Image 1 (cartoon, rainbow, N blue to C red):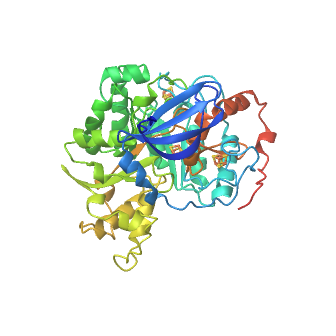
Image 2: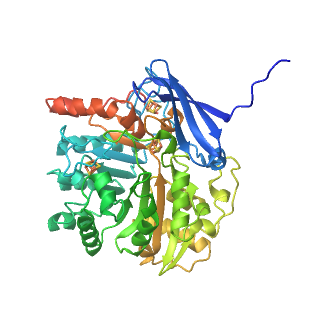
Image 3: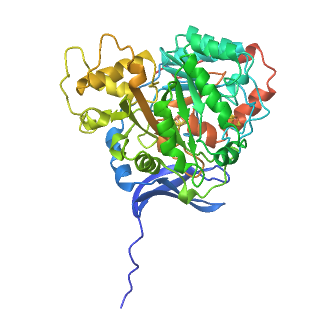
Length: 485
Ligand code: SF4
Ligand code: SF4
Ligand code: SF4
């Protein structure tokens, strides 16, 4: 009697391209559904097989396609298609989305030495103010009216020219200027805080929890919480808007998620939280790729640890990039009461791009679909007048009594929770990065999608180039856009 092999332990869902975590060569990768979760399996001809968890909810993963919004083209591309994706960044003509969030890494130095640092901060380069002005010129040429520029590093606040750089971004008409920081300078430097307030800079603030052990493991500084709390209070006094950015690492601070939410809701400077699954690149590659933190698990912990103040169903994928990259919710907050907008609006009526329903406007001049698309975007920055206006419209559409003419005070009632899962060399998928909307902006005009920058060797190449260049005019030649769109 012939024998039949048993059934596979998984469903083969799709094929993508990834990289070998050891040698970084591009290889095929299978996406498999197994035990209710989603895994990536791949094999390097030299280094053998690899498997990693990419999404802890197979049912949600397979229904995300409806949130995949058509991309918007940039005005110009900086590179040609030559070796093929992901070696031609960018943006090359094959890229499917313009850049909502442009990141300028102004330095590689830092006043901390976090074991978790994906940027591997330390010796390297420091951009000049003319470098940054050139980057901004080119970003405006490629985008027309850019939405967000985020200054990053290293630690950008220790760059001696960071304030003129932030001002240059404002002068270039960038709608939202953000500073990505560990908060140390903010805790002590009055003039710096005053400049952030004057320039209306939104502060993207590293904040991983409350336990000394969390900060010892992730940041190498068990006592830094006091400094961070002082910085946040100073930002509140200066009326600056803050987004807390906790990196959540398995076995370290996943139990602190609910406490971070409660703290953020109560703090007068904090307009939202961007939870990021700890990202295993740079200095922090060691982990178990089969048990990494992903968005569905962070959402589950928010539900458990906030006693249902926020629920799993309150979170909706962000459609401008690939929908597995981010999920977000917005809530109207009054005292202890928290009312997430997706409990009041049928989000699929507006953000399902497969059904593509035509929904009547909720009132004269109220385009709720446009407002929700702007909020459910990587470019939305809570606390800014634009985001408050869109939030007000959403609230009014679902019957919350807000003063659409005034809007004063509503910024304090608007609260965002975003969840983000950057790809690492184990989970990298070319499919996702081709629609990435966050890019590192370089002095030569290239925009490198963030997950390509961190995984494919671009970061290392750029660091070496900028550290060793003899600086000067050659770096500031106007960029030749090879493929105007
Ligand atoms: S990630 Fe985008 S820009 Fe980079 S090579 Fe691929 S398609 Fe081109
Ligand atoms: S993670 Fe941020 S604060 Fe920590 S060393 Fe890296 S750049 Fe500095
Ligand atoms: S940075 Fe990475 S995770 Fe974020 S949108 Fe781009 S590809 Fe997706």
